[in-house]
Length: 70
Ligand SMILES: [Zn+2]
Image (tube, rainbow, N blue to C red; front, side, top):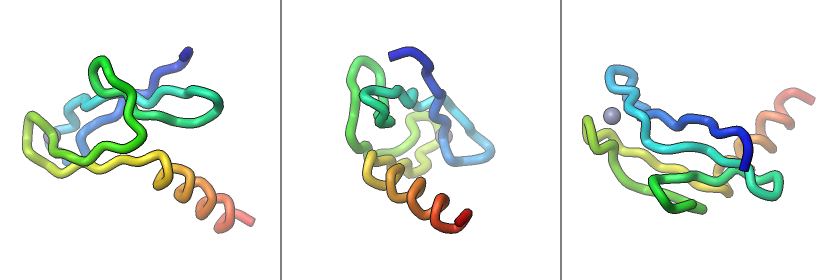
């Protein structure tokens, strides 16, 4: 684990720090507190905004973005 990317609340008026993206074996994972997650579904502890994240969604997002570029 080298570079940590901050994950923020999707609510533009809140932007609380929810966790970090960490790179392990060239894959992005979500670090929430002391645990590393493959997926996370919950709400922001500060404002209650829904927050969903998953490894497979991130991979899909990259594939689609690459396809749109080509
Ligand atoms: Zn929030």
